[in-house]
Length: 335
Image (cartoon, rainbow, N blue to C red; front, side):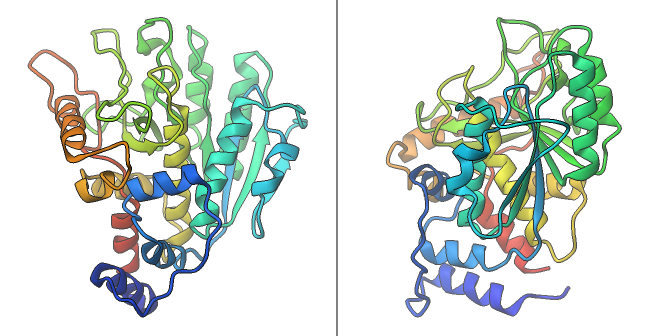
C-alpha cells in the first residue's frame, strides 16, 4: 500500500514525543478541544499531524425544520469553509438547534484542517417535504446531518427517501421521546450489522462531560428497533433527551475521513472505518478533567452490556467502544 511519508513522520513524532515538532498555535474552541482529546488527539503535536492529512473539501447538508442562521455561524466560517441555502431556505435570524449544531461541527472540522461546504435545507412540517429535502440533500452532499426524530406512520416517507440516497452518509442522534417505541421513528432504520437496516445511516449517543461514567442510552424493549451505532465524546450533551451534540462530533469525524482518505470513500467505507477504530482508550478519555480511570471503566462496563446484553435483551450498540480519531488518522496515514 502507498504510504504517506509526511503523515507517518508526524505520527511517529507524536507517538515518540519528539520535541522537534513545534505545534502550530491554534484557536481551538474549548468544547472542540475537550472533544478532540477524548477522541485520542491528546496534544497539539497530534493535532498538527492529524490536520496535515485532509486534502479534499467536504459537502455537508443539514436538514431541519428550525433552519440554520448564516449570520450566527459566520464567525466559524473560516477560510476554506462556505455556506449556502437550498430550496428556499433563509436565515431564521435567531439561534436555532441546527445553528448550534453547525457551530459545533465547524469548530471541530476547522481545528482538523477540513474545508466544509455547508448546505442548509429547511423543510416544512409535512413529512413529504422533509422526505424531499432529505433526498435532495443526499444527491448533493457527502454527509447529511439531521437532529430531529420523526415519528408516526408517516415516517416511512422519510426513511424511504434515505433508503434511496445510498451515495450519501446520513448521521443522526439516537431518538427518545415520551417513552414511545423506537420502531415508529426514522432512526429505527439505522445500520444494524446483525439485522436489517440502512448501512449508510447511523445514529450516535454521547460519552458526555455532563455525566462522567454514564452512557446515555435508549430504553430496551420488544418494540424498540433503534440501535446506537457509535458513541462520541460530547462537551455539550446534557442528558438522555439532549444527545444531539454527540452526533455533531460524529459528523465532524466522518467529514475528516471523507476529506483525508487517499481516494474519496463510500459511505459504507466511512462507517466501517469508524466502527473498526472505536475503542476504550483510557489514556485519551482520562485527559478530560471530569473523567478518571474508575469512571472510564464504569462507562466501559455499560458499553459491554449494550454490545453483549443478557439473554432475552436486544443488542443496542454497534461499535464496541468510543470513536477514536487518532486511530482513524493512523489507518488513513498508512494508505
